[in-house]
Image 1 (spheres, chains in turn blue, cyan):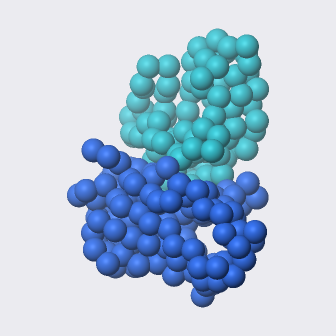
Image 2 (cartoon, each protein chain N blue to C red):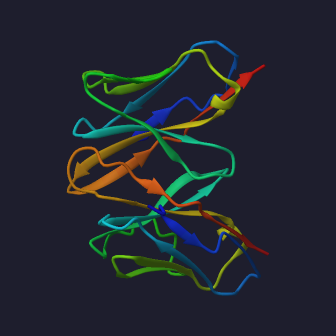
Length: 115
Length: 111
């Protein structure tokens, strides 16, 4: 199993540009999570999907952030326009959510720098 | 009060020492519990799940105390390679499933 795949691994962009982060979850998992991690705020859940449907987007910072999951094997997180304070590592994770147990598996992350 | 609380550390211990971390959670309906390990500039990775009866994996022992709402992780015979941040994770069901992460406990094992 390839695990959770994220691209790009690193992204450097200028303030005001659009940024799109991509994630391919583990095959068979029914839930996908987007997290952001910074030194100051730690790991924050932005949004999660269950069966491709957004369930909880209360962590999305503002309207500049949007996420989609058009099918079970692909999700995007878009920031438009980007700002320097968006600089962070963005992780995607997947799991089989229902029931007891069933841990999350994380992708390697996208390190975003907004200048 | 945070839903999941951990002592941020750092815990600085010599090689070979035994070290223990605790994590408290506030939601009594929490279902599942995990310890993750995160190395610097890497993604969190599952270290072990925590079962009601407690469980052991080599030098690592995890315990759950539902009455007092805490979980613990014990590391025996610490190695330099154990240096990392250890994240406590609680899975709850309050309408929807949620994984709640603690802020992590930093461990440094010293030669």
